[in-house]
Image 1 (tube, rainbow, N blue to C red):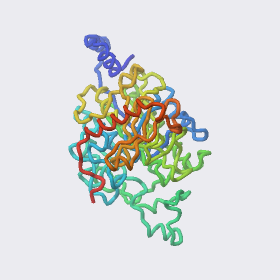
Image 2 (cartoon, rainbow, N blue to C red; image 1 turned 135 degrees about the horizontal axis):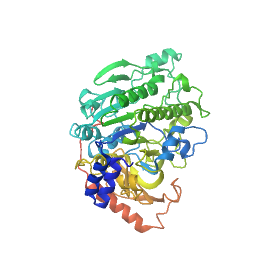
Image 3 (tube, helix red, strand yellow; image 1 turned 90 degrees about the vertical axis):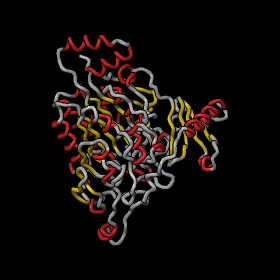
Length: 473
């Protein structure tokens, strides 16, 4: 039987409103809004799933999601680093619009006094306003002060850490345990077996600090447990779960059950434990009999942190990684799974985490906030394998546009020229034929150079300056 949201989407396409009422009367059962589950890995690369080609990391649960649902191959994070990327995902807006990217800092730090502004509308607020139970589990990184925490942005509950797991470093403890040295920190390779005592990042419940310096080896396990508990406790009503893992952001930690589980070293162990976590979430949905009522998305907040070599993951065939506007920095794994509603397919159209706001608003049939102007509704692609409505993607680094994609073409702009207020496209790539961005075609396609330059100009003209939240101290 088709579940209601799928049927509703087809009615919108066909204009057959009367058919919806016929369907409801024939079913003889009360309709319910679908549950929404968003699972986000931290710094997981495009090439880190076995279904995306990794030869030594096993991801059977993600592979199953991909084989049963839709795997998107041209899906982008809103930014190439944590804070702006997560802001874009939750609001459907490029972070430049709300001050969640900076010309000074890449992300928020423990001494930052800024955060996601109170007037921003999140997916959690959108859903809570129409009766959803909302929960966040995991890493927030959109402001650690009380006024910026998840419970102030639409989440009924939150269990997790306020920023990255490598922050709040206890340098005295590190030196004590490493013979007076900071070890291999920021030399391009992390410790092979880091200790949780090196960091005093807070583990929080709601607005309260539960523990400083939690055992990070248990974070993936605990996040999974909390997520499963939330699903079971709320199986009888619509809910939104945002599970934002702390891994595989370095330093890398995994539980003892996954030590040596992979032939790809500690990084492989970490990814295989994340895959296990995905499996536990899907198992809980099925055990509660609500898997066919639930839309699940798995993705990553940005590309792999290549600075850390074998502990930084892989972007597969793509160029670059985290912190860059090459596709390896922003094109991320993406799988949509909804048994009985989303049919198995591989989608080559362009999508983005920015589009989750509009897509979810469409799925639950609520009005999209006017401020979510950068979000596209992907339901026609999800439910009918139609063309994606997104054709453009703007690639910001800090507050500067470094690249723009339109269709198959992606242009990179001269950053120094941008800093002078000029627009100068310095390279053009055909991503369909050259996803690694190796062969500059600017001389062959002057019309594409002109089109992307004009798109740059038009987009920037529509940006209203916002307070830089990341620079606030």
